[in-house]
Length: 240
Image (cartoon, rainbow, N blue to C red; front, side, top):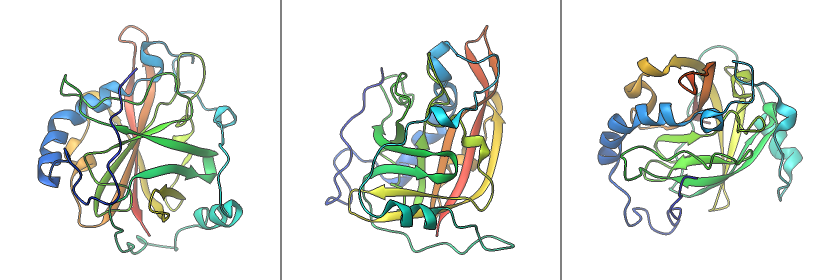
């Protein structure tokens, strides 16, 4: 099970141990491929028959406070017809607390992810079916920059939180609730799969002046010899 360090505090804009954005991006250039390799379903034991599973009903929807019906109505609104929807103004840094994607029944808490001693980004715990991780030394969701959110497609025994991530389309919306009480709403720009041995690190992890998010999981065929999926699925989205 991967260890998760404490999340950055919301009162300190540059928490202790947090690298500068330039430094973080340098780390990403070396760790990105490790992330692509590490986010395997079931840590080498896949429950499916060679394909990433598709079973949204297996994803647990945790209860939440506030007017959830209104939040989900807003989160499910389609993007404006034609072109890219204008970007919203970036928010201050704040730890994410819950990811809500109404279309695929995701309502999951966050855990912080860090670069481990091996130099690789540690994935979320392998047996947690309803948990997502965010790279805590990078941008927080809603903050200017590229925030990274990773989750498993399956575990040793069942589909996991991102089992249906590939069902998202351009214009779909999702939300990230934050520790500062704000909710950051994002619209999907594209959903793409990449071979793990040709993963476009710079395109996925490149810094940006806008607030953007990448949702990442495994996809493609499950190679039972390598005990790994052959591709990574990436959802590109921006704050609205």
